[in-house]
Image (cartoon, rainbow, N blue to C red):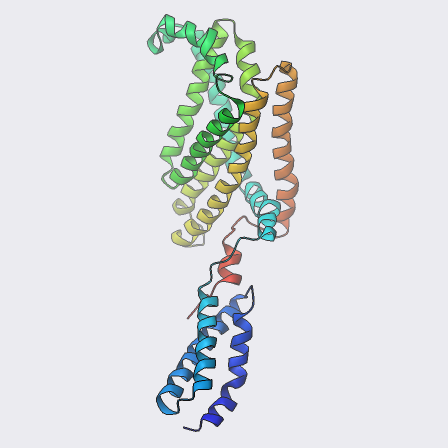
Length: 331
């Protein structure tokens, strides 16, 4: 074999492979080209080693192939621009696109919760089957109010943040099955309704709403969002439309994962409010005002940034760009 002829014929391809292996981001076509060039260079190295071994050429091709292999296998790194794009486009676009799912979920839960609470107030006999009179008095007069101040604010904020994030994650994670999400929502809303009815019946309605509302507005909305997204995940394989069930479930699953990450920060804010604002000595109207402002900011975020991103083509499928632009798509 004529080594000089091989080098002359393949040198431009090697240089192109070298250039591709040094780029931070690759389009889908460039990723395919990288893989093709890697395979051709590996073949060239094998030919050189077996027919016309040359230390310089072997060393060059070995280093080139190693660099191309590392680039092809590289996991996309987290960057500040990527984080900014997620919170400015991907997350709000997903919330906006799925607004009917979590919006209807929120409305139904509020209606069911109010009706259940009203029914419990009108049927006090149910109270005796749930708790003893001593337990009711302890809950109404001491436990409900002290719950928000018995721990240091920072520790309490962390506790409720982790707990609520876990509930949201379960709503999304079990959403593919549908029924478990409904059960989780029922447990959540029934618990609030029972406590609310007891507080109302014993003349402590002002304490109940004054302590629940500041953090509860945003906290419950985040749970409703998680549940709505979970139910959309369930519906993706029940009614996939023109896509296959697997493709629909994969797309909605990636979106759900992005929403789960975003809700962690929404729940962090509600946890801070619950730990520092709810038990604070601020007037009730001020504490409720802070909670209402937090919920209003959430809606502004969804219906301004989210709507703008959705109209620009964002869907909330945070994995789509990684699949198409930053990862090899064929061998």
